[in-house]
Image (cartoon, rainbow, N blue to C red; front, side, top):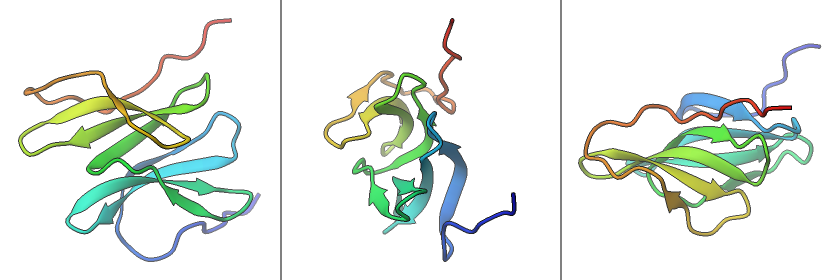
Length: 109
């Protein structure tokens, strides 16, 4: 079908990710000198910040309910798992070396 614009303005950074069910778009945007990941509900047209300061590069967990994100700290970035429902993210890596963009392996059937 035709392309439909779902965001306005500038400040969108990095690559967006679409949820496994196709209902949510996650993307990174500028946020007061930092970055944040936001969730855009493609059905309702609403945007909700994930709530993790310095977050970027979202990747949806194929099993649902979580995003893997890069979180930028003062001197390094980590990979965290963040619940889509909000709350505290869980750090998976601890720096100080650079961590790449998070991704999930495809589910095995």
